[in-house]
Image (cartoon, rainbow, N blue to C red; front, side, top):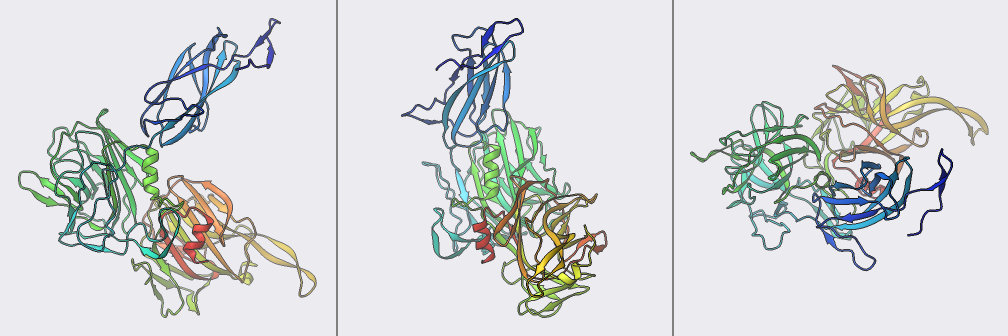
Length: 588
């Protein structure tokens, strides 16, 4: 490599030359990619170790600056030679760039090295519960491993409310001949469960658990999601009001329970995951792809009981099963290794392999053909009711809101506020009404109150009037101006939201869609099928608040009423990934 021509003047006077590109050594199991050979090795979670040394022509190197392609910023390490370790979070090609720094702090030429990270071992067990009947088939991907099909027993059935929703494309992105409705496991909370005939996980070794759950209710009863007889238990703990992981049997010496920070949400799909690292005796609990608890736990030893879906063994001495789950469990998977944070986040996205995330419609209300003050969702399969109140009434195919006290509400949050979701509706904003609004006044399209007093939702906010040319009168006129916002209104009146690119149109239908990606922590706003304003990072805001249309709740009262006609209100669990997917979901 040619020596750099960049030069600098030392304080003492003589010219010196910046350091040359340093030498990089990559330790096994990884190897450097060559022009004709780039071998995959290691895997997600398998450490990559690099040693940096000065170029043979340099003698005054004191540190190095380096950056892996997956790192957001540069890092530094001191020493004439130095060794650093990075943990790849996913498979694929990685680039490392390193610069040597001399005693004057002058960084030199970059040295670069590519290496390829192999895919980690696949799931040793995976259950979709999408069969027409009979046993739940194990579709794990590890070759040579025995299949562990699960038998449904008691009040265990399949329904059409699987977490993957309605699919219109296959895993290769090719349109299906007809839409495919996913199925899931439904449990009655008293006898319903599924179980394998023998153990799936070797609990003496490292492992990972993953499942989607939707509890029908959360009260004073503990509910188990996954358990292996005599071993781990992934559950809802009624006393804690949230999800917990018991990595070892209840009777084991020094057993410890990990407790999630965020409260559990009833009647909403939630992703749960847990890992046990045998080499470190460490367990980790995740909710919606985010780490919630970490703890040092004793080794659990090998357990020879079957894997239970929806119940747990109370005591091996009396073989009594307890804590039956009431609700839905779907997309269960187990690995005989520790997944990385990135891999767990991908599981929580429920990626379909065709560039889309799976979305499940959990609320769908239309005024078309409805009568009376209650709109029943007959489409999603979950049946939530939307109740009109105050100055809200049906008008043809729309809900007409008077902007004074009109609103419509659905019990429960519908989606887990800490999880990904998509919401959409058609709005006709009353131009005459908003033309009298003061600048900064806001009206809510829909909202959900959260535990910290903030409000998630989509709203209109008035801006100064605009002067425009009226082609009918051939004169200039004042018209109301305002913008759509999607995001979080904080309890102190500030907000974190994406704003529409253009002023909101009045008196004509406008389709609005909001997307929250919990794994990235970002929100997006679509007007029609066009994304507006880019993605914005916000904090999640879990809470059990009701879903409100046309206003928001503030204690026992409602505020921020919107004068508008609204129709086709839809809510999905899961984040749409593109304008194309938004178009497919909304039917445009």
